[in-house]
Length: 326
Ligand SMILES: NC(=O)c1ccc[n+]([C@@H]2O[C@H](COP(=O)([O-])OP(=O)(O)OC[C@H]3O[C@@H](n4cnc5c(N)ncnc54)[C@H](O)[C@@H]3O)[C@@H](O)[C@H]2O)c1
Ligand SMILES: O=C(O)[C@H](O)CO
Image 1 (cartoon, rainbow, N blue to C red):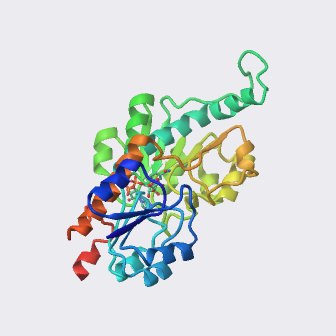
Image 2: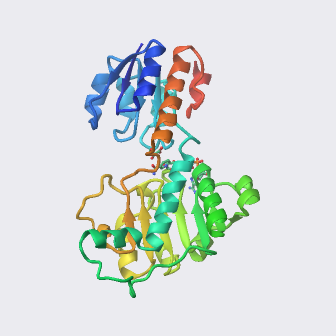
Image 3: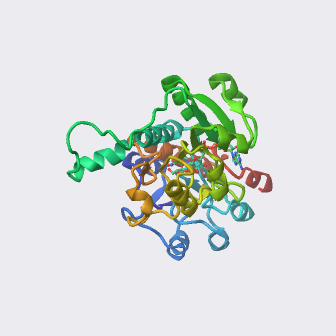
């Protein structure tokens, strides 16, 4: 049984696969695959352990229908054509829960660094622009006691809401496809309409998955409905906001600041105007990038492949319909 690991993972997890009798084929460090290359290399393997970057589209599944299972090392699977995978009868797994705390930390970090302009200020020191004492203009704002609006209150949204409630005494409002009773009970989250979320939030943090419904949801119309003092945070997917509209909203003063861990496209070009704004911080998609979390994610992915090899269902399967077809 051969497994292709499309992007480097912690050694311990590759070892775990070998212990289970898999023959492991690893990509060279940092490799970015074209679809053609990935499709070609997958002809000689039974399983794929895949991290975002290269989309797995209908064409991929047409040409790789021999694969027995694909384990993603991400919770998001918007880069995978799940319908095509199901049609090809290939189970796909993702990595929910284990990355929620690490990603919520990055959302909170962005809230803090943007509200206090900390990233911009630290860079002023690096550029030799610190002129003694603290700044008297272009001041930051505080989070304490303000209202956090969450768009997509699932696992990561709730992990952020807990932090915001406990550390900053923030009021939590949210907009979701369904009410989240656990969050309402635990952090007194209040369900509101999308427009109310825009109007009432001091900070809006995006935690929905990317879909045709959420793509471009934060556009010029949405930014104009937000408070002029609002901070926009996105650690979910860059395509949920429209980057041109976000830039204009910041330039025009429709909103106060923005913190992004995800951009559209990725990577963001260094010439992007957002990068020179004092009220913006952009990170290179590091939500889950800790030793602890990445280890848990890859172990989870590996366990899903082991399950398939042993004739069992993937514990974290996202297209459970495949098991009804077999
Ligand atoms: N920056 C990173 O490194 C990083 C790390 C992990 C996850 N993510 C992103 O975060 C997303 C959320 O992860 P999660 O584990 O919290 O997922 P989740 O499924 O637990 O939560 C997503 C929530 O969004 C809601 N939602 C979906 N579509 C909606 C819509 N149209 N309107 C309103 N609400 C909607 C869902 O009902 C759900 O409650 C992932 O899909 C991924 O894209 C990014
Ligand atoms: O969806 C996810 O899990 C992240 O974006 C990748 O770590």
